Image 1 (tube, rainbow, N blue to C red):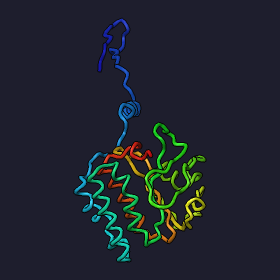
Image 2 (image 1 turned 60 degrees about the vertical axis):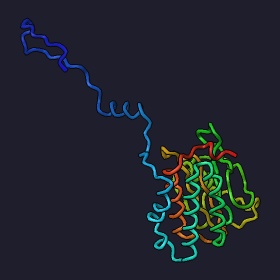
Image 3 (image 1 turned 30 degrees about the vertical axis):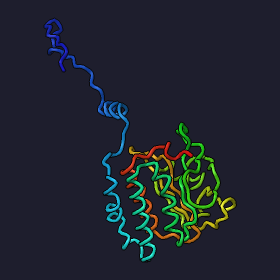
Image 4 (image 1 turned 90 degrees about the vertical axis):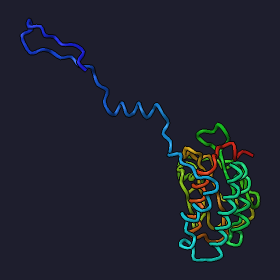
Length: 239
């Protein structure tokens, strides 16, 4: 990048070479990243591939020792795959009922979605959406950062699956038992993500019986795989 050289012998020294200033590597990388929003890989599963993928990835015969529980979770997978064939909106509307009906014998008394309202980019509240079970408290108000506003907000803010084998021990736990009449013992929260991997809602379980580690694995893989099969966005969770 030589711009000019001074070969004047009047200065008496070697020729002076003037070079164009170079941007630092860090600055160039920063500019490249800011020029485009980082997103997760966008490989998608077809709806017809979803059921086989769930069965392969979860391995119910390994994660659960209870044949009845394995069979019920597998029927949840079958129902989820059938809904995914219809698209995002039918999946949101119908999946809580599929889960609730199949898993009721194991104490899964309430399950459903909570989501922020459109435009609430730094969510101040999560509102109940499609659900199966008795009425529960809504909205859930945000009290601060992580570990201050209960499992649903923590799952949304941290964008990861959470499990509480003792629901009442979770920091900031929000009990809906007074509204629902349930005696919640344990819970699972799973983020529902858009195609870029950003959370648009959470799926929440209130169980009146103990849950198993295999339940957590099954629901985590189910919703992660659904996000690679149908294109969820916040609008699908508005009532």
